[in-house]
Length: 484
Image (cartoon, rainbow, N blue to C red; front, side, top):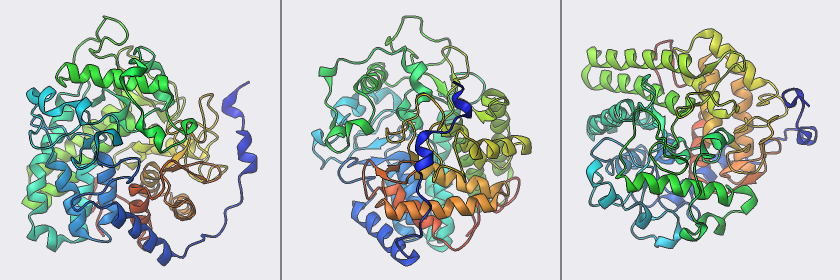
C-alpha cells in the first residue's frame, strides 16, 4: 500500500475546532504563571519536574516570550546561558544547577564531567555543563529581546556584551562542525538537533551499539509514560554516543568517517540537518542587525548577510529534495540524503532568501497529506503523518511541538501565507490553553503529552498573543527583521 496517499485513521476522528476555553487575557495570565513558577532567579527551567536545569534552545525560545513580561529577565536568561560558554565557542545544551540532586536528571553532571573531560575544549571550571550543543537560536533571541526594550538593552550594554559570545558560537559551528566540508554545520548526536528520537535518526543510529542498560538509569521515565518516551534501545544509543564524545575530550571529528565499526565513536553519527542550519542562518541575519545597531551599517553586518545568503545556497544545494518538495537530512557517514520526512525539513521556511519556488513547494508540502496543515492536523506534526514510523504520542516521532509550529507560523507570514499563519496561530493558542501548556501534543486531537506547564509552550503563547501580525523578517534581505 502506498502510504503517501492514505489518510491516517485517527484523522477521521479529529474533533471540530472548538472555541478557546480561555480568553486572551486568561491565557496570558496563565502563561505568565508558568514562567514565573519555572524561574530560578537567573534563568527558567523547561519543567520543574522533568527538566530541572537550564537548556540551551529552551532558554532562547523562553527569552523570546519572556521579553513581553520582563525584558530584564529575558536578558538575564540569555546572559546566564552564555556565561557557561566554552572556550572553543560552543554553547552547551545543559547548564546544571548544583542545588539539584544528581539523580533528578540523567545524564547528570557526573556523566558529562565537563570540567575535566572538556578542559582542552575550554569548558568553564566554575559551572557544570553538558558537552554537546543545541540549535543556534540565540542571536535571533538576543535581537528580539533587545527590540522589546531598546533603552534598557542599551543602558545595560546587553548586545555589546553578548555579541562576542554569539560571534564565537557561530565561528565554532561554521568551523569545527563543518564535518561535510560544504559550509553547513553537522550535529554529532540526536540531542544536538533537539528532535531527539525523530525517525530521521533511525538509519544513522543503527550503526551505534547501545550502552549497557545497567550503566545508566532513565530519570525521564519517573515523569513520563514509557510509551510516550524514546525506547530503551534508542536511549542506550544516545548514552553510547555521548560517552564516546566525552571520552575523546569533546573533540570534534572532521574528515572521512571512522571505519572501526558501530559504536566506535569517531563519527558514528554525523548529520547535516536542515532545521539546525536554518536557525544558524536566521541567527546570522540577526547578527547583521546586531552589528548595525552597535556600529551602524558597516561592512561587518554586510559580511553576516553575505554569509547568510551563501549558507542558504548551500542548504538548498545539499539538502533540498525537489521530488519530495522538502529539505532532508544528510548522513555524512554514508553521504546520502535520509528519506524520512520530518518537520525539520519545513523549518527553512523562516529564511528570507529562500528561492520563491522552494518556499512555495514547502507550503504545498506543509498543506499536503504528510503534515496536514490547515486540514486533518490541528498542529503540524513532528513527523510524516503517513509514514510507517509515525506515532502521535511518542516524543518526536509524530506529536506536535510548539517551538516548531511557532517557527512555521513565522515562516508562513514571511512568505505571504497570512491566512494559513492566522489559522495556525489560532489553533496553537487554543491547544496551548486546553493542554495546560503541554510539552507536546497529539497533532490530530491536541491532547497534551509529556510535561505540563512547559516553559517554551507558555513563552511562545505570550509571543503569539501579541496583537501585531509581523513575522521574523520584514523584507527580502532581513531589513527591519523582528521590529516590534
